[in-house]
Every structure is written in structure tokens, then in C-alpha cells.
Figure 1 (tube, rainbow, N blue to C red):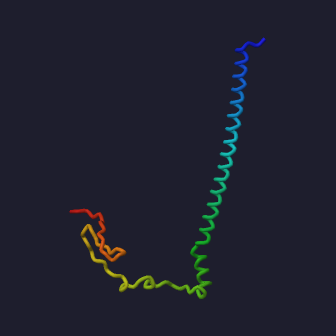
Figure 2 (cartoon, rainbow, N blue to C red):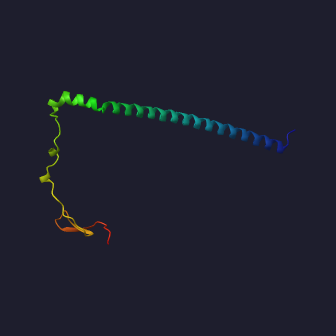
Figure 3 (cartoon, rainbow, N blue to C red):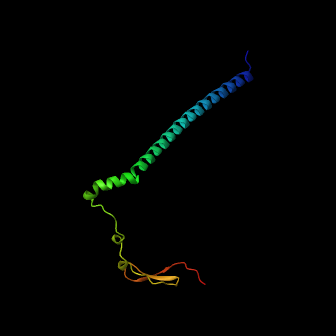
Length: 121
């Protein structure tokens, strides 16, 4: 009734159908996972947008000025004087050096050469 070649062809056809079904199932699973990832990415982007809006709201100069006025006595806030950072006398003038090698004092107190990579004329 059936020849050997018929049985072999039926077996090949069944294995091809099984392989096709397996491949289709794996592709659908991957597409489902890709859709999940795209949804997560969109949710994260939306969260980032909300956080940026919150930061923008919280750092508005008008709002910060109101808070500074409310809490200035408690926090000791006031107008900043440029001399609070440094005075001209506290800034020392560094000597100009045209050499390529500067001597820097190391941790052990000995001077160590540091090459600055200057350009020779």
C-alpha cells in the first residue's frame, strides 16, 4: 500500500510542519516581549517627562524667592557679598613660568618634575 518513499515524504512533511509551527510560536513570543518592552520604554519616557516638569516647577525663581523670604531667618539667608567667597588679599598671584617642566612638591616633601606639554618656539 505505502511505499518507503511515501513514508519518508510524509515524515519530512510532518517535521516541516512541526518546525514551521515551532518557529511561528517563537516569533509570536518574541513579538509579545518586544511589545512589552516598548510599553515599558514609553512608561519610563512618560515618567521622565513628569520628573522634568516637577523639577521645572520646583526650581522656578519666583517660588524659590518666596521660600527664601519665608525661611530666611531660620536658615540665616541673606544677599551674598562677593567677599564671602574670597578677598583680593587671599588670592595669591602665581608666577608666570615659560618652561615646559614645573617643579611640584610631592607628598614626601621632595620636588618632582611635571611636564606641562608646552610648545617650543
